[in-house]
Image (cartoon, rainbow, N blue to C red; front, side, top):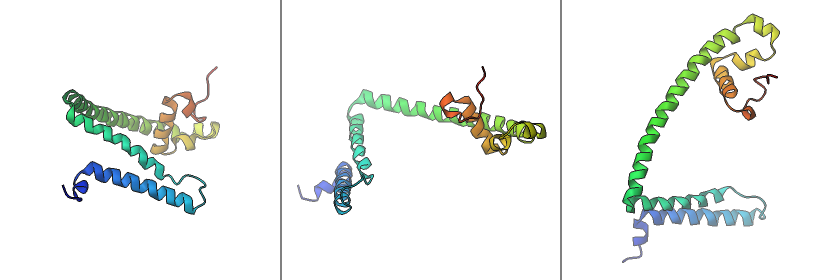
Length: 142
C-alpha cells in the first residue's frame, strides 16, 4: 500500500475537503478576532452523507431507496400538474380581478394582488396555504 492510496477513494477526498473547510473556518475566525460564524461550518453537516454508504451494503435498504426514488418521480409530476392548474387559475383571476375597474376603484391593492399572472399565482398560493402565510391578502370572515 502506497501513500497515495488514500486519494483513490472518493469518501477520503470528501472527508479531506470537510476537514479543510473546518481549518479554513478556524483560521478566518482567528484572523477576524473570533467574532461571528463564517458559515463554513455548514459543510461539516455534509458528513451525514457518509451514512448513505450503507445503502450499497444492505440489500433491503437499497430496495427501499430505489422505491423511494421511483415514487419521488411521480411526486414531481404531481407538482408539475399542480403548477399547471395554478397557472390556469392565475390567468383566470388576473382576467377577472386584475382588469376589473369596479374592483380597482372599490378595493385597495387589487393591482398588487392580481395585476399580473405571476402576482396572481403568488396571491393564490398565499390564499390556499395556512393563515400564517396569507400576509393580509385574505380578510378574515367573522
